[in-house]
Image (cartoon, rainbow, N blue to C red; front, side, top):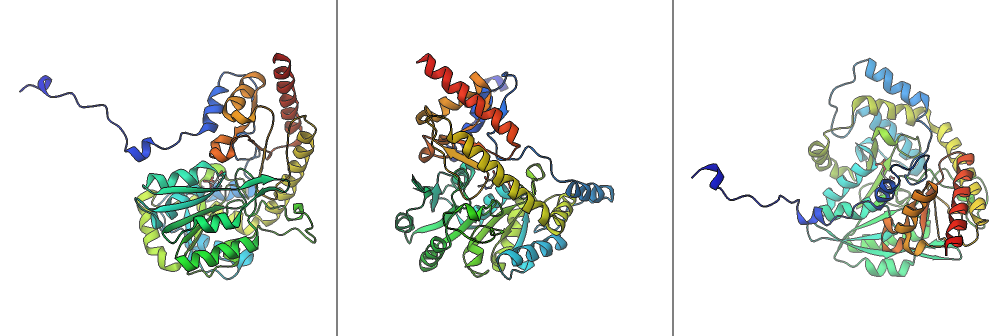
Length: 408
Ligand SMILES: Cc1ncc(COP(=O)(O)O)c(C=O)c1O
């Protein structure tokens, strides 16, 4: 038989679970903006400012000194020790044995999911939610059920009874992101207490994505008094370090290090050997010079982070009042993260709306439907930039609404 007689193989496909993953609708909007001159991009979750110089210099010095080798899977000892000190300071005693360094938050989420869930497992997630959290367990064959936050007079709120009812004894893992992307919702201490007690009773793992914990504007809450808290309520404040709670964190947001890919996990010490194996088979380690930059961020970055949070709060308030003056926009100041998630005319078909806004007036915001069906009717605007740029964006939004009202 010659080679030309062999049957032609069928077109190769990825596994069904992978093919079923949702593509990013934020990318879809960004693609619609290709070729449009002068787009103002507010669609991604990052600041327009570069990482602070003292962090970049630490990485350069480390690289110049030859830090080009593999490290321990769980991270270099000085970074794990620095993170243990940082987490202890914010949330109570935590040792380096409870810390694993990861290649940013998204890798930490994958590692946590790989540790805990497999094919057929039931996972519950509170939505609207950054899509990666919902899609990652699906790669592993898990089923993800969602519990939706509700939107009303007081902004986004959790129906605690509904969440507890969804956390059935056969649930393997709860995914909770607070402060939340996209809504800015922050879970209260009492809600965390009730959820932790319930999950303890049923042996459910809590994977808490707390990458925005420092972007918390405590005195935004009605009736709040006193100095703003340095961090949002965390499951780490309530849980022991050796129970079924895994906390995900990242250098991306509080130190403006999105492109560096550095994060960490706080987890029971008993998991660390297995977690080390997973790191080995995913990325092997975070780059050594990036980890050195992480030490600089932790040891010298507190003033920077506190100033950043003050700036973000000012930007949030600026954008809220600018948007509140736009007819048909319903916007409230959320207590955390770096986004406004608001409704506006046309947002009931948010993907089409966002594509039209980028095409027609060069305004780049993310469609609410990118964060699950519960996000439909809203758009997300990242306000981590200077106020002049926010004002220019609001002018474009007004122009778009004027032109579309005129066209109807
Ligand atoms: C809720 C949430 N978790 C995790 C991440 C991961 O960020 P990174 O991988 O840059 O640490 C993001 C990024 O936007 C996020 O919004």
